[in-house]
Image (cartoon, rainbow, N blue to C red; front, top):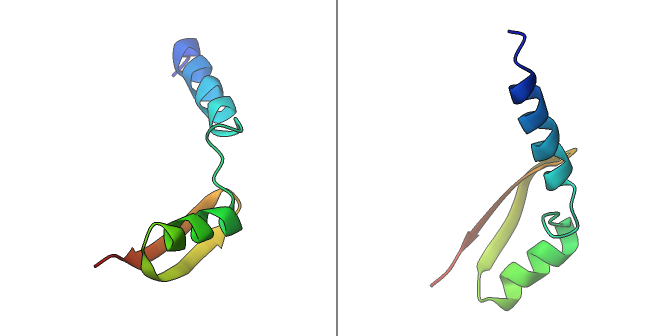
Length: 58
């Protein structure tokens, strides 16, 4: 495509995702969900930077 603007946007996006302000670590995230009143918190999938969590709140 020869779109350097897209490449630049993608690089900025990737670096932004790795910022300490954006990273959601597994254990603290699950604990936070519990402390906020969510029940049945389940880690369904986790690989590299992807994580899928389900929970219920009454």
